[in-house]
Length: 212
Image 1 (cartoon, helix red, strand yellow):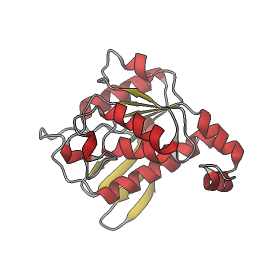
Image 2: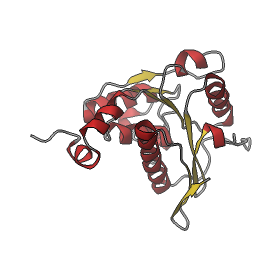
Image 3: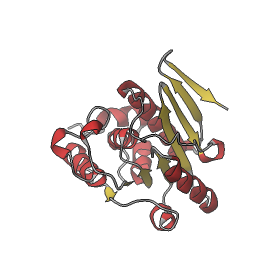
């Protein structure tokens, strides 16, 4: 009887899928990028995942995130954990807390890779600086208008906030899917081969470019 990762095993081989299942990942942020990425990775063989986010689900999240109207008011990290268990039978860890410079070592150390999908420069700076100091591989994924970027810490530049409501910006669901799909492939390549590739994506002309 074929298992739930039947097609992934045919494509990548059982040894590679076993390696992915043992990789320790922490996704920082369970919003549009983070929630879709976790759901994506769970279906590609990643099992040892943690998600950290202090926020609760709001109605405006429904269009771009994995949550339903019944989840409104609940903690994103905990709902995402329950969703992954219900849909693919994997038990990931949820940390419904704020990530700060004071607790970064407690929450981020010990992972094979940190994924930054936060939507504000303060949290991104905490991750960037801690991962650099602790020598932890870190992949940053972000979107702005019709542009998406995926950068490992060595090539990442922290964006500056415009001072507006961080939730009040244009965001296309198709771009979210593109960015998280590329992020999934980059993480697989890193875990399997140690490669660190950087990409940019523009939805307007539907281009995915590998950057030096």
